[in-house]
Picture 1 (cartoon, rainbow, N blue to C red):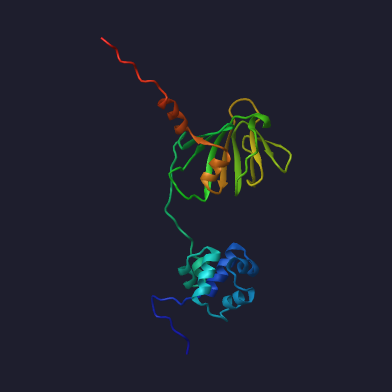
Picture 2: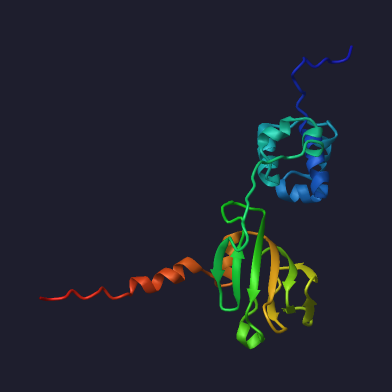
Length: 230
């Protein structure tokens, strides 16, 4: 007789979920072993339903792979065939966004109302035209994609020779590498940059300050009008 699953219930298959997770991320058994502290032989047996998992091992897998422990009790198709659907969205009107000023850039951060974004879009107006004017190259964790909206850009990095990018050109690079965007042509020069990482890290890396903070500072130093006497 074959085992029948009651309607509305599913059989927990942590091994199948583990295998699906590993394939989804392109991890080897050795990499999963390094993340969880479980041996490759144990992981292999779990994936092939030759070993059950204790609660302690489930917790180690959950924490090591950054996955909710409840997902380990689903079927193998829980990870691979069911897309993760969210309902977040943000509309930024023309010229809108969080304005951040730096020595070399004027930044607009669209979708500023969304927290914990996986990617950070930035519209940058380039101001510096030489490395001396720009200063120290910028570095921040993650990767970055840049598309030239207007003008011409001279793109510098700590590992490659400078490259010229014209309107419509783009570049994708490791943003942990020192880099700088310089305005190379006449007139306005703007770049759409899409970065992975945390928004706070990006602002800190560029030495940026919110425009609102700068605009409000002089007001606090304004003198009060003198009162007339008599």
